[in-house]
Amino acid sequence: MHVYPSLRGRVVLVTGAGRGFGRLMSLALAEQGAQVLGTSARNRAELDATGAEVEAAARAAGRGGRFVGMLADVSREADCEATAARAIQEFGRIDALVNNAARGPTEADANYYLALPKFWTAPPQAFRRMVETNLIGAFLMARAVVPGMIERGFGRIVNLSTSHPTMVMQGLAAYGATKAGLEAATVMWAKDLAGTGVTANVLLPGGPADTALIGGTGVGTRAQAGFRAGKGPTGDEGRIGGILPAEVIVPPTLWLCADESAAFNGRRIVGKDWDPEAPPEVALAKAMQPQGVAPRIM
Image 1 (tube, rainbow, N blue to C red):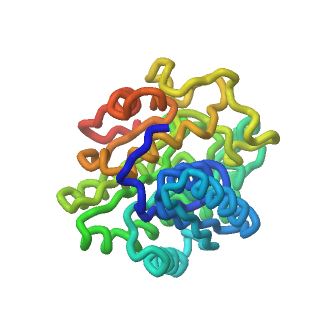
Image 2 (spheres, rainbow, N blue to C red; image 1 turned 120 degrees about the vertical axis):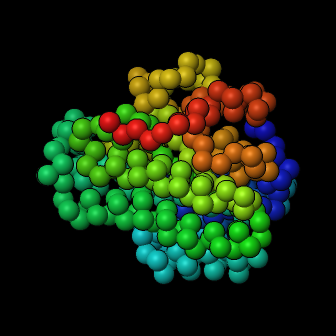
């Protein structure tokens, strides 16, 4: 894994840190020497387990990384404000926010992939939870941290998204729409933040990844055998013919939180296309998608 000196001492908030992408990103950031505050909305034991693992790995890496866990629900404004306040209390500032917390399509139907439920059959409360967590929650967290970032002239916002085909996949109820909305919001945030030293970018795995967001058993064992990130063709986003290892999200996360990403704002990076064995500038050239000239939905 490439080492970024600027991540040593960097303060990063990672939402949804108890498992999946959040756990992996927290682990890698702390190994680089970052000070990580990770949140979970529902599971204290899960978050504590992540914290113990991350702290142990950070000590072994010897770069001074730390992890502090906090129960907080990003759909609640008060929790988002409290999360930002806790980070400042613990570490003195906030340098980066990774908006990873999300509720997946299993919230509406555990068998969504095979059942392809119609939108009008989605339980309204499940639909509402997805919107409030995946879209409004990202806004509330960004709202809580951006003023301080602008005041210091430095900040990174990383919004976790999904593949374009997933956004319009039948049976996903609100999930695809929330991620499409988050990408649209990121474009607008990037425009608002231009020239401030704060950036907002989108990161996605590039296909279904082996986390609990994908229904079924055997989480952590379902990835394609022999898959190597950044070695295959680009342009097959969301149509990979299998499940990606969750680790594809890690290398671009580190780059997005580091100084090297300063010139990039309002961009979209696909994790499966980032080659962790290549120099970051080479990996970036393959994993970053061209900027669209105009929005296009249909």
